[in-house]
Length: 268
Image (cartoon, rainbow, N blue to C red):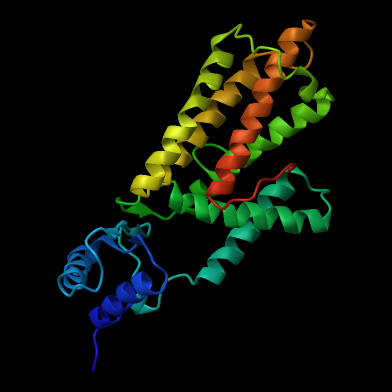
């Protein structure tokens, strides 16, 4: 007979021999930490892989129910993934219909899938993977707070503003961005964190850092949107400057969601 360990040892050897891996990352429950450390040591001692091959366990915590107890797969009482996705899509439809009861049925189906599946992904990725967290439908699909829907909705606002402006910003690429208020400055400065965050995620496997940054961008954009006149300002240079900030916000939100595997939406 063979054990789990036998399979995992063979897998590491195969991944190095066949795929020429230089870094192997395991995203496994934190309770498997000792087991994986033993496996890593065995393959090195057996000379199946060289010492410079990176073997990393990016452990994560448990998903808890409302009673603060972990879901147990072996008991068979967990929500199956297909049911989870279906339920999230249905709940997303209800949210969309409340905002737009007359929405086209085909558009409704497309939007509800993007919002529902995005909400599930974001709910998991936005948590520090080391910590446990409580599964909560209401928080997952909220239009406020650190959720994918909140960020997707901010992207909708940016696209709407750019369409209403009806200006080709490519003609104004050399025009400097002017900071008249701290709302503009705070938002624009926060863009500079993007590169550093990506490097940290690549190194540590912590996607919640990107989620937190996207949420920060969204909050700052909302303050900018609510406190700064963008479309109806007479000063043309200032108008173009603010529209360029809107454009940059849209690009960062789009790229950030893409990296998380979440689709953007352009209307709701």
